[in-house]
Image (cartoon, rainbow, N blue to C red):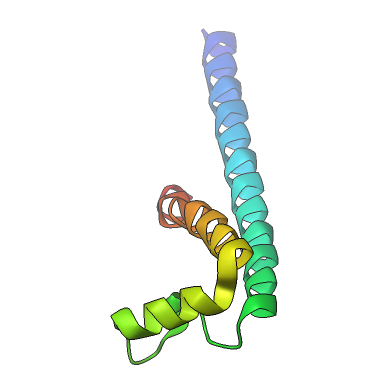
Amino acid sequence: MGIHLCEKKMKKFIITRRITLLSFLLFATNAIALTYYGKMLEKYSETSKLDFQIGGYNDTIVKTLFAEYGSQGRQTYFWLTLLDIPFPFLVAFF
């Protein structure tokens, strides 16, 4: 009886440890990728990303920013946004 209980606890520990490790790896990968793509965007425009517009933004700011980014900058922004969407969910489950 004691061995069976010990095995259950060990399996639970291993599963929890794997989930924690996977969460950490996803969190670290996301943080590195967001930093990388954020730095790439700085090459295309001096204007802050839409996320960092303290007073909010309107359609004029969006049009101006994406015009400054150009085709390559807009593609980078797309990947940055795609990576950024699941970030709150990762944090919530961590």
